[in-house]
Length: 198
Ligand code: URA
Image 1 (cartoon, rainbow, N blue to C red):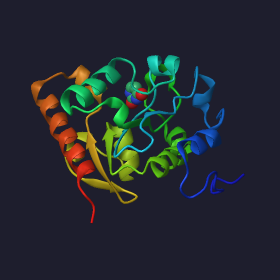
Image 2 (cartoon, protein in one colour):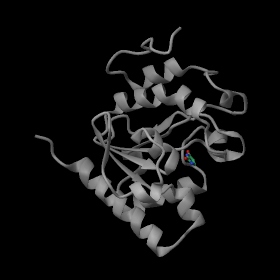
Image 3 (cartoon, rainbow, N blue to C red):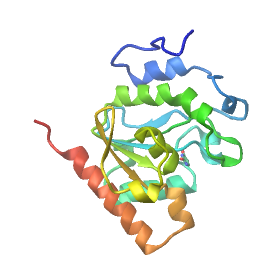
Image 4 (tube, rainbow, N blue to C red):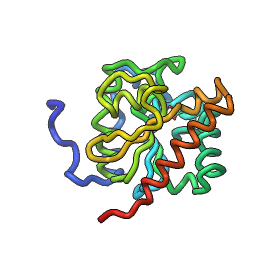
């Protein structure tokens, strides 16, 4: 089967995308995973978060952002934005844990990309938050320095994208300034997701 063969209808459900993913062996990450970590949250969310890839806890539990970085992300969403985590949709650019949490390789990201696109087509969020460099580089279509592009609006397939620092970076560099910048980005993303459309 060629890479261009459609795997689901034009407006798929998340279930159809998940089913097409199957017990995926399209890249080498399948060899080291405990399970696929597909996504979590509201299938009709206005706000979608896209991270890098599952870590140890995520691989064990099958839920994205459920380890330390995930706890911080959940605090930012629930304590900061004052919305339920279950009201947004959360996923990653790769669905299987990279060995020792290394950055996913280009061929791994490209093998998984159509499934992220399928998730976006299924959820049809009004705004996407790209968490960290790998997710932002994928959605912007170029290799970016996150500190340069965060805080500014971009677009992916017609959907506004707000890049911001990855919560794992904030945990490592837990400064008032970094927390303030992420807070600004998340507030802007939530406001945009709530804007009424003509
Ligand atoms: N980091 C990510 O990018 N995604 C997760 O799901 C967990 C940690």
